[in-house]
Amino acid sequence: MIKRFFNTLSSLLFLAPLTAGAQHANYEQSKTFAQMNSASHSSAEHTKETATFGAGCYWCTEAQFQVLKGVEKVESGFSGGQVNNPTYKQVCTGNTGHAEVCNITYDPSVITYDELLAAFWTCHDPTTLNQQGNDVGTQYRSVIFYHNPAQKQKAEAYKKKLNDEKAWDKPVVTEVSAFTKFYKAEDYHQNYYNSNGDAPYCHYVIGPKVEKFKKIFKDKLKNK
Image: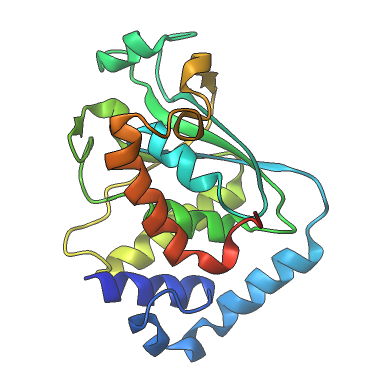
């Protein structure tokens, strides 16, 4: 299953080999994606763009995306619900309709939306409906809130590709919806892992996820 997933991502994004198994990906079939990715890098203006992803607990998602080169800011918050200015406590009830999300500001001349999608589908399990590990509820759903038609097209096309190639044993259930509003979570949720690295949840849950993520995207990490 893991090998299939990485081979599929390689064929989509023409990323450097992510695992030993990914070296066997059919790069001939991925030339079009490689050309698109290259053109995106070369033609992108130095303006910032935004991606909004929900991948379970936003503490984990935030910590993973913060390490990627080209990602300039990650804010944790809520999107997709019907309650204005929700609190974390309200969202935790599962009754507001919101998902925990990260609003990611990035430089498209350094990292493309395609590459952010690869990171998104790598950083969580997109086959479990309204659940990530022990976190259960609609607020933990896998979701992409697209900001423009191009993001919508890419998200839907790549989701279909992952399912067509059976990258996982179960179908990808990621929701793809139009972005409406983002409500920033309380201050203590921001930069949570970096500020609370010794806390048990950070040490036993977030830390291992970040280290695994770094190994996969080792060629795309910020210089320390």
